[in-house]
Image (cartoon, rainbow, N blue to C red; front, side, top):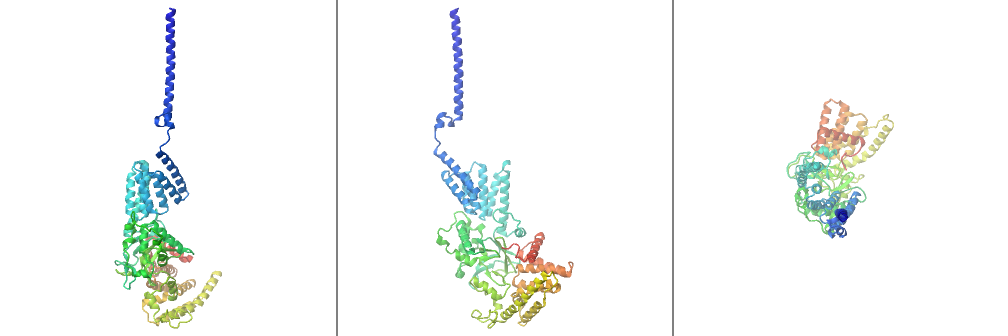
Length: 610
């Protein structure tokens, strides 16, 4: 029995020992499995000891560099950010995020061709990553928009909006649909000239890169009968029709370095945009260019230009850009505070009695017909204020390196001797001058002291708060003297208007004098005459808008708001503003007239002009 008991005890002890050993093995096995789960590659300690592959190391390094680029981008250092993204792409050439971020840098810098290239690469590298693919599509559509390839941009944005079909893509889809609508609007503008002019003038247009697209209407560059190049109509146009809308290749504020800034802007445009480079090569650089053939109009239509495609030629050496300062000297157009190079308007020749007029809305230039024109008529525009005597106009022209030979200048110099008119333009010596020049010069001599006295009396009136009134009779007598001199010359209606508007300052001063003295009926007749004369010399000019607004306001004060004179004056005011600003009406027209009134009251220029 003692032996059997010992055998049982031995078996029990062995079983306990085996159970304990099993738990220990299970415990060790569990710990080992836990370690294996925590270790990479599922290879236990061996996996932890293995180094990363070179490819993985480069990816990590590229990610770190891309983050540095993002930080530079956030600070506005786009060139630094682009350099960082380039470094990241050298390590990881399939990094869609780096390409997309680089595209955004180029969009901010307005280098749209480069932005398109990067966005396209981002799209290629993002297959399978829907979020990144949508991001790349958005940037591609914006690059195409910036390049004026509006049809392609709208198509790309539409593809993206259809891809963004999930509920979580709602915000992206809404953005892409907005881009599509914007590009469709710009397409209509570029191809048909369908602008909301009121929204443009009153700054209601919100766009990504441009407030409106460039547009070319019924005009083309052509060789004229005298051998010069100019802009002519391709079909009949009506007064007030929109002829073109143009953005500048380069613009700069006035100052000592304005020419340098314009040249620098053209250099940058040539290098950054192949389409702009093609346009630059077509622009005139001197009078010698008049002998060249007229350039093809397709060059100026960016939305369909062959130079606006991928891989278009760009300047490769500084020598190719050497002619650009001549472009600035020959083509720059000045506004009140801004100077720029607008491509197609550079071919419009000057006239002191132009048949078209321009409006600058910010940097955008709109050109309208001021008169009804038949097909094949040359388009002319004034380069400077022409409501002044010929001598003063010639001074402006000589600073630009030419002499004006328009019909108005030829008429006003009738009878003048040659040799640069000798002393005919000397105000104190009219020897050799024709009858028009003599009359204008003598009027200027007589007007100077009269205006001096009037301004002093006007200042005294303001000082005494109306207790004293300026003497308007000297101005009335001076006008009568000048009108009698002109009547003796048997001038036509158009010639009479030209001669009067060469002394516009006298008529404008007389109008003011009649206002402050309360001679409403006399002012009404005078302003009607001024508006009729402006329709010959400067139809569509801002001066006509101001005079027509003053005519309507004076009629209300003088004849009563329900009078026939008010109705007629209001119609003239509406017609004058529609001629200048195009097809506007309703609340937009009312607001623009209000702003004209404001410019009259404040003595400032046109509300939208630069």
